[in-house]
Image (tube, rainbow, N blue to C red; front, top):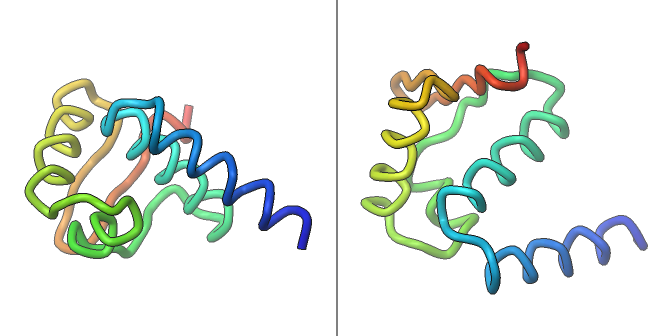
Length: 85
């Protein structure tokens, strides 16, 4: 239970202080850790709901991460390339 509380407060702190691109990257890394894979089966709408932002904002920021070579995007999937290195 303490782990969940710690994660909740860290997520809240990130929502207040970090830009969306960094929040997205942190969320993707945490999801990959929990699922034990670097390729997530998740839609932009689901990511947006997790982060409390619009689907369009998630799409813009995922494309920025893709342009930096940090993610590979597919249909309802995100592959986190920086975690594979």
